[in-house]
Length: 272
Image (cartoon, rainbow, N blue to C red; front, top):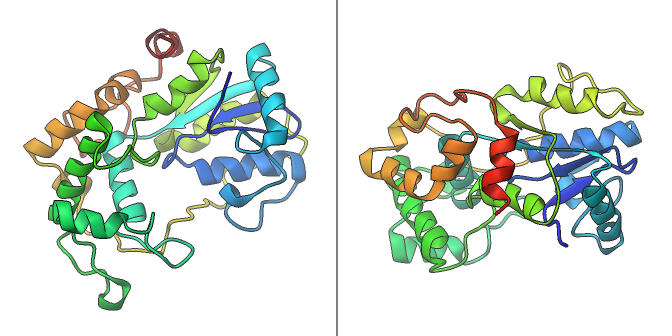
């Protein structure tokens, strides 16, 4: 059994299924802190100690055993699909990565050539038509998800339900799935269930947004990026995310969920 994208505290008190662009940097830092008493100095995705990660060979058996036995409190975090795909665009497509380069090397030049996506440059202050370029990127994202062309879908814009399903189909079960938009409330439930060695005050800890400051700022309200065609594409590729996680498809301006996550429904729908 495999559990990709799964992190676990050293104490094995809690298991976290990472969903990219859903506060994963902050959650990872909190899980690091509860056992170590300090935050990781750098991007938590680069940490090779202080957390068990599925990507680490020595952690695989420990994570598998914990998940199969449902030993640790198992959780994940989701986000409004409209704001998540926008965040992916501004971070991974329009932004400059931590290494000073564009994401995935030739991805942006390919998007410019095949889809007409423009992203500007740091030298010009990232000046470009954000709405037009984002809508063209969305068409590309749909093509990768529906037809796996011109490339396989990237983890940052593939559906949240797809990430979460991998733990379920391989024998895991979630105790809690909460919303990025209600972060403190949702993360507090996790902390209340794991008896951390080092208590965390969610009201005072920093938010670890590793993509901030490396690209253009979003100039318009969320709803301005989505016309009728864009909303049609969003429903085509994220229908299950909107339904399972109770987000408002009809109104891109409403980032808040319409109700809580029904864990029984999630396990029934994603466990097939």
